[in-house]
Every structure is written in structure tokens, then in C-alpha cells.
Length: 103
Image 1 (cartoon, rainbow, N blue to C red):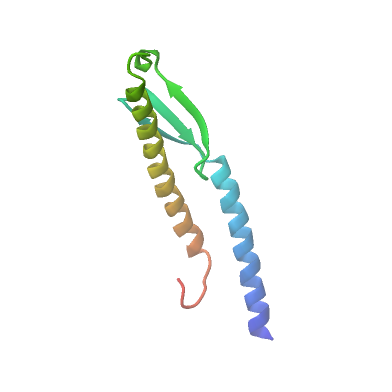
Image 2 (image 1 turned 45 degrees about the vertical axis):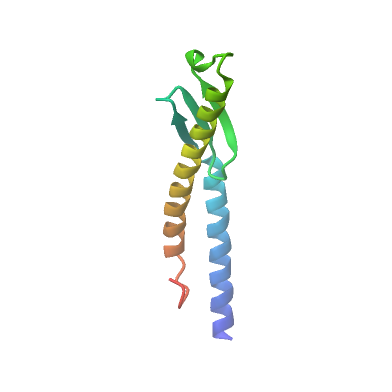
């Protein structure tokens, strides 16, 4: 029975850590950019797009494709940064769980 109680305790700790991580991810704000900062995209830790900023000089109705490419590039930059930050947070959280054989 002792092992079952320990397992339940570990599961509760894991659930609390997961809830804390989800809250932190929702509050996270990561910025990606392209075109030397002419286009900026802000994502949360769940990769939801929260904001797109465009400098006026990058908006050219004669070259919409360039603007589209810059937006995609800024989004990809932000996603890469979010993934790195989430990975860093996950390793920190996983270190808090002492599950034999896993960590």
C-alpha cells in the first residue's frame, strides 16, 4: 500500500506541475521578427498568435508577396523561440519529478 500512496502523491504533484506549466505558457509572450524588425509577430507559449506589427514602409501594395513572406518568416522565428523556451521550462519541471527510470 505504501507504493500506491507514493504513486498517488507523485501523480498529484505531476498534475500540479502541469497546471502551473499551462498557466505559464498562456502568460508567456514571445516575439519573432523579420525584415530587420519591420515585421513582428507575438505568440504565447501555446503558439497562439496574439499580435502582428508592421512598419508602414514594409506595406507596399505593389509587392504583397514580400509582405506575406516577411509575416511567415516572423511567425517561424517566434515559433522557434517559443519551442526553445517551452523546452527549457519542461526540463525544469521534469527535474521536479523524481520518477524512477524516467529522470
